[in-house]
Structures are given as C-alpha cells and as structure tokens.
Length: 525
Image (cartoon, rainbow, N blue to C red; front, side, top):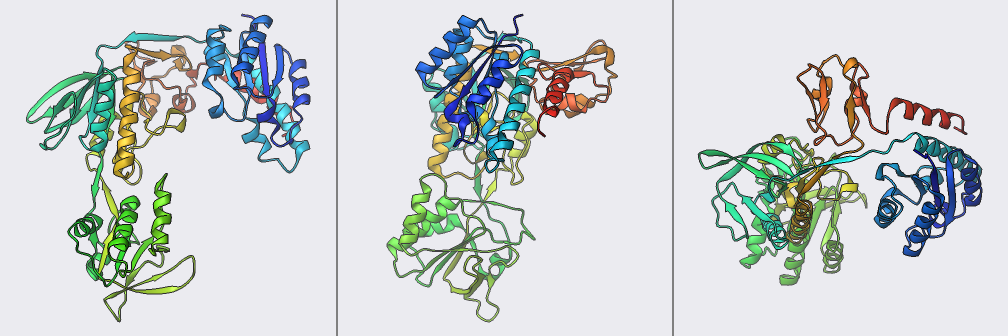
C-alpha cells in the first residue's frame, strides 16, 4: 500500500473572507509526511476542476484523498465518483475537513488563532489519512423487488404511484376497509405486526383480517399519517372550542360567524391535561384567508406559541396578514383564557407587543393534529424511534428528509409531523422514487466502516446486544458477540459502551484515534 495522500484545498471555500491564509496551508500540506500531492483550486466542484484534480491524482499515483471544502454536505458527489472510477481510489480513503464550520466561524475575529488551529487540524487529518485502511463492501441479491407502503392516505397513494411508474411492484396495506384507488396490490383491514431482516431483504409479518402471514419486500414506506385531534382542555370547557376540521366544514357550508373567529394552536395551552400536539398551521392560515375573503367584516385571530409556515406557505402567511388576519404570539405561562367577566371574549397577552387583548368571538377552533396511534406499533415493529409528539423520527439530514435511521425504510407525510395535503403528496412521490431507486439495483451492499468483535476479549455480557439501535450484534455459536454486517450502520455505539473493549469500528480504531488526537494536542489548543 502506497499511503500517498492528495490534499485538495478549495480557495473559495476555505478562504472564508480572507480569514485563513490558504497558500500557507498549502505549504504546510506539501511539507507533511505521506503527502504526494497538494494543490489549491478555486472551485473544487467545477467539472473542469474535477478533471484537473483527478489527472493530478493519477499522475502522482496517490491512493487516498483529503479535500478541504466549505462543508462535507456541499461537496459535489461527482468529485468522489471521479476519484473512485477514474483515479481508482478506494471510497473509504476519501475524507473532508470542514475548516469553515469548525474553525473559521468560531474564530473569524481572530485570524491568527484561526490559522494556527487550521494548520493543526490539517496535519491531524493527514496523520489520520495515512493510517486508514482500504475497506471493501460486500453485496447480496435481493429476493424480491416488492415495495410495501403502510397507509393509504394522500402520501401513501402517491408513493405507490411513483414506485409503480418506476417499474416496482407495490403492496399498500391499510388498516381500514375504505376503498382505495392505487396501483399495485391494495390490502384493506391489514396492519403490520413485526419485521425482521434488513434493507433489500425485509420479512414482514402482517395481520390481514384474522390471518397472519409473512410478506417479503426490499423497501418499506411509512405513510401512516395523522388525524384531527378531538382533545379536551380548558378552552373546550370554557369557550366551546372545536377542532379545526369543523371550521373547514362550516366554511364549506357557508356558515361563518360575524362575531369573530379565534384559531388557537391547542385547547390546552399549558399542556396540563393533553399531551403536546403538532399544529396544522397551513390549514389554519388557509381557513383564515377564506373567512376574510368571504366575510371581510369578520375579525380573525390566530393565537400561537410557535408558527410554522413552511415553504410557499410563507406567502400565504403574508396574504393572510394583508387581508387583516391578526397573528398573536403568546407564552404558555400566560395562556389565552376565557374572560371571567364576559364569557364571550378571550383574553390573551401578546408576548411581542406586551399588550393584553380581550377578543370577542363567535367561534373558537384549535389546530391540533393528533399523531396516528398506530405509530407506536409501527415503531416497535421496524425499530424506528419516535418523536416526543408521537411521530416517527427521521434519520440524519445527510440521508435526506424522508429517510429514517433504518436503511430501506422511508417515512413521508404526517407520519413524522403534520403536513399539508400538498407537502404530503410531494413527500409521497419522493419516498416512492427513493424506494424504487433502492430496489431497482436488485443488489444490497453492506460492510465498509462497520464494527468488528475481537472474540478473545469478548465476555458475552450482552451490553452491545442491548444497546445497538439496529440489532446488529448477536451471540454466535461460539458464545461470543458477533456483528451482522447487513444491519451494522457504523454508528459506533457498541464500540463506546463495550466494557471489555472488544469491539472496534473499521477506520476508527483506538490506534487511529489516539494518533490523530496526539497530533491535535501538539497544535495550538
């Protein structure tokens, strides 16, 4: 193994408003051991620049690459693909160093200190790169190309359509017996009971009517949705507050109170009786706009602790304000309540203006959306954590906004947080497309930077088995812990918690980390 490193410094990214001396960083890299090539470019992600960088790597016969861009998430995937395919560099010998986020921004008022730390970090990264080993991935063939979609709401149907258009076979399971028009197989009165396996080769146990059967699939899309809340709370008792869907119905029937409409986020602002809810502010804003257009004399107030008008809904927020809708932020320590002297009014303290408002109303409505109670059983079956509000938690942003911590499982629509119908459709399409992309290869890859057990050190204490969120460790026939590579995601939890220090993560071994740390300590810290 050559252990020759190419260091690529992007001037535009790393200069960061001239805080760092990029040319000096380049000299430091050139003088470091194991560096076979060190170059500075203006735009590392430009197609012509990528070609130049790769040619330099090939001519210098380097076998690993260290790039210093603005941030890892902003690096063009084309750069890594070019290294992998054209320069023949192992994908586990390519790393980035984020000098801007970790050094420039914290020390932008002290360029000298920023420069010293940047140089130390660069040398530590080079030291680490020299110790990395080329890792390989294994693969196995998918037994089926089925895509299972849980939930036949707006998002679920869109996911089925998108996956089917991409040539996948979809199976949509729905707990109710409602009629669903969707491509593929639709299974009403069906729910998920349990699941095992991994991305590409899942085995689900489902309950269809009174029968239990197994179902193999390559990917799962969760589109369990949410529903309007009929929660109880002080505002329901004191003001007769109703759920927002009732207001939507009344507007459709032409029933609009001329005495004023108040829309609040929850019937229990203090959360003394009901649990925290998520709020359908898109629907609340649209309802407020419709009321003002149909009945301009009706005063409309939206009372909220936190307003989330996402994407183009920000334009609706502005339109509502232009139409005279009043937005009032309140503190839950001083929540809105019925006026004790006049039950036809709501009293609220505007936390922005500091004013106490007494608002007359003809109707009070709350925009709470309750999470689907089925999320609990889905979470347990697929081993996906839940949010505090009862939704299904998504994974890291690097994997995308509809990914979950479990590879091969996607979540869309109101299954993770209340979504408008439009957003649910878009997320459903995205989930269907990503599921199809995963399944279309017919191959599932695994391995690489994963955990490995040293049997002689293992005491079979089961700590790793209990800790791993992906259920990768198990006790093998020899009575020692083993790692199922298809399930390991390289999170390192088992490594950190093992009392016998019997587990290491490839390319994050104790020796590698201690050597890198020693290099850091030698710098200006």
